Image (cartoon, rainbow, N blue to C red):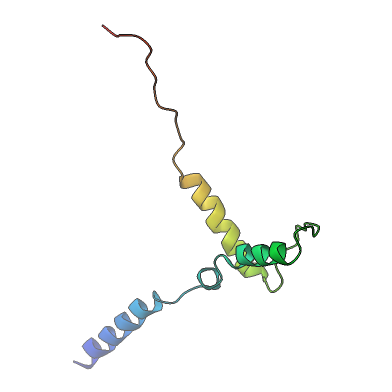
Length: 88
């Protein structure tokens, strides 16, 4: 009986562990919003390729991984077939 309770408790903790969110999810779109605010404040400001302040290496790696994984899984777009004239 005690072993069953311990197993159920462990299984519950594992399932709840899947509900945690990464910093990537919490801060998704923050760089986009910061860029928008910067452009509103000074539209003629020089552009920079520097990472947003406060971005640590782990978060940057997770963002890059999500980006490249999404690029690989996208379906290639094809133009629709256009037929001119009649086919017999």
